[in-house]
Image 1 (cartoon, rainbow, N blue to C red):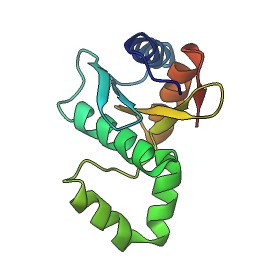
Image 2 (image 1 turned 135 degrees about the horizontal axis):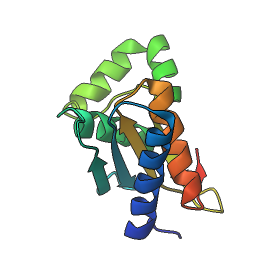
Image 3 (image 1 turned 120 degrees about the vertical axis):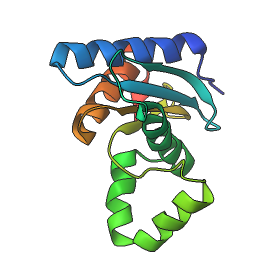
Length: 141
């Protein structure tokens, strides 16, 4: 079974932030969690707001906890809002079903973590997460 390493997590963050700078996005925060939802690494760019960590982690926690990207969770939340409000309450507000986080999968498709970003639109956040995962030689899901 593969495990997400600190080196991989740091590569994901560095590449995600590089993509954000290249695209001219607002200052970002990027959180990488392992398969159990534990924080592996986080970085916040200069000028990022104080909420970047909480939002990026909550997106990633939802993704890894439910086994799908936060974009999919956002779509599901529209159809079943009461369930997702309950999930947020149960997780003490650490669950955010909004675009901006993707799963991290190894070569066999095993989920080894998730990465979430905050600072741009959901599409921008998701794009930099995908770029980071790919730069680490892993597969976004």
